[in-house]
Amino acid sequence: MAKGAIFKLLKRRRVKADKIYMGIGTHEGLSTCDQAANEDAVDDLRRAVELMSGNFKLYDEVEECGLHSENDWARRLPTTLIHLFGN
Image 1 (spheres, rainbow, N blue to C red):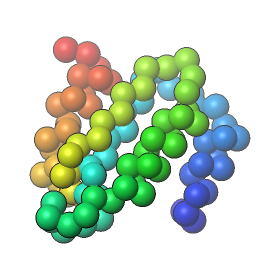
Image 2 (image 1 turned 45 degrees about the horizontal axis):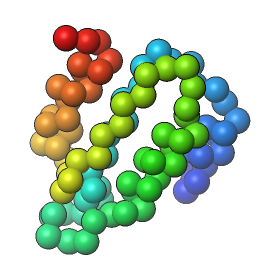
Image 3 (image 1 turned 180 degrees about the vertical axis):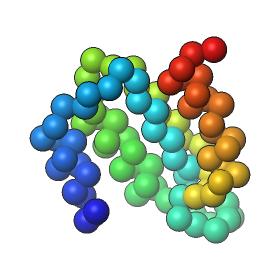
């Protein structure tokens, strides 16, 4: 999807969901946490959250030093499942 296309889609369409979880790491797209944080990715998540406000429960999580990796996704999975399905 072209950069920014998701925001156009979110503006046009109403989200049809009861609950949404969005998670991101501050270092998405980078290989280590030693590098400067990927502020663009975090800003994109925040913008998407703003555009999706509606009649549903939205939980967004920004993980400090989180990378784009299965290990980091696994760390966030319990929170995701609790939000979506309860305890």
